[in-house]
Amino acid sequence: MESKETPTNIEFSNLAIAFKTKSDKELKRAAFLFRIMNQQWLVKLSTTLGLLALKLHLPFTKRIIEATIFKQFIGGTSLEKSEPAISKLAITNTATILDYGAEAKDTEADFIKTKEENIRAIQFAKANNSVPVITVKISGFARNELLEDIQKQVKLSPAHQLEYDALMEKVNAICAEGERVGVGIFIDAEESWIQDTIDRIATKMMQQYNKETVIVYNTFQMYRKDRYAYLVKSYEEAIQGNYLLGAKLVRGAYMEKERSRAEMNGYPSPIQDSKEATDIDFNKALTFCFAHYEHIGFCNATHNEKSSMLLAQLINQNELIKKHPHFLFCQLYGMSDHITFNLSNAGYNAAKYVPYGFVEDVFPYLVRRAQENTAMQGEMSREYNMIAKEISRRKQVLS
Image 1: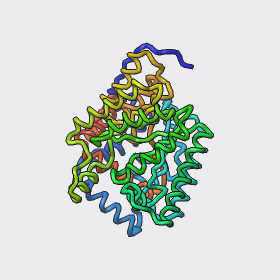
Image 2: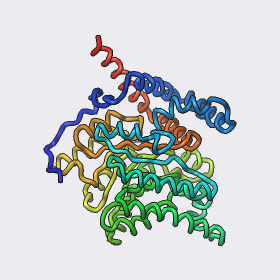
Image 3: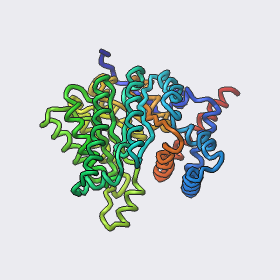
Image 4: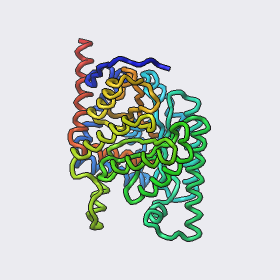
C-alpha cells in the first residue's frame, strides 16, 4: 500500500503537463472546435443540422462529424478502436471510465445489444488495469415511457411488467459481472422524470453488490435542488442496510431540457436558481462524502477547478493516501485536460470519462456536450484560451 503523502501543490495552470500528449495538429483542431462552441447561435444551428443530416443519411455527414467533434470527445467507434485513446491516457497515469454511448433506445434488440456491449466492456476493463469503471445508462435497457410509468407508480400491465423484469435482469447481470471481476459500475443520472426509477434501481444494486467493496455507484446531479438531501438520505440508508454507498457527484447535463419541460408543464423547475447555488451544494456534497469516505466511495466528476482543488486539499490536509480507492477525480474526454493531467501527475486517482460508439449512437451525447457546455458562461472561453496559450508557448519554445 502506498505510504501517506505530504501536501503537494497542484498548479492547474501548468499547460506543459496539461497538453503533454497533444500534438500541434490536435491542439489546433481543439482550438477551432472550442472557438465555435463559444458561439451559442452557431452551436444550435450546427447541432440541429447535424441531427437532420444523420436522420436523412446525407453523404459525408458521418465523416465530417468523425473528423471534428467526434474525434475531440469520443474514444472511438468500438472498444477496440478506443484502445489508442485509452493507452495514451495510461501513459500519463490517467485512468479511463468507459461509456458505451447508447441511450434512449426503443427495441428489445437494442436493449440486448446494449447489455452485451456493457458485459464486453467489463471484460475489456478486467484485462486493462487502467480501466477501473464502466458507465451504464438505464435508458439504454428500457423505454423511457416504461421508466416514466414506474416513476408515476402506474399499475403495469402484464406485458409492461415483463419489460420491467427484463430490464432488471439486464442491469443485475451487468452488476454481477462487475462484482465478479472487480470492475465498478457507474449508473448515470438522467432526466428528473425518470430519475426516481433510476435511483430505486441503483439502490437495489448497491444493496446487493456493495457489501464489501464499492462496485455500484449512483449519480447525484447537484444542479437539482433536492439532491444534497437525497445524498445524505442515501448514506443513512446504506449505513442502516449495512452496505457501502457509491456516489458519483456531477453538476448536471440536462439543464435546458429540465427548465423547458417544467415551464411547459407548469411545475416548479427542479434546477437550482443560480450557478452559485449549484456550486454550494456540490461542494457541500463533496465535503460530506469526504467526511464519510470509509463508507462512501465517490467520484468528484467536475470541470470546476475549485471543486477539484477542494478534494485534493482535503486529502492532503488529512494526510490520506492519494490513491485511496474511495477517492476518484474525473473529467470528460476532450475537456479540462489542465485539471485531469495535473492531478494524475501529482499522484491522485484521476480519470477521463471516455464514451465510445457509432456516430448515430453517440450524437445525442455530443449535442448535450455542445449545448450544455456552451450554456456555462466562460467554460468554452477557458478551454479555448488555455489551448491558445499552449499553442503560443510552443511557438516561443521553438523560436
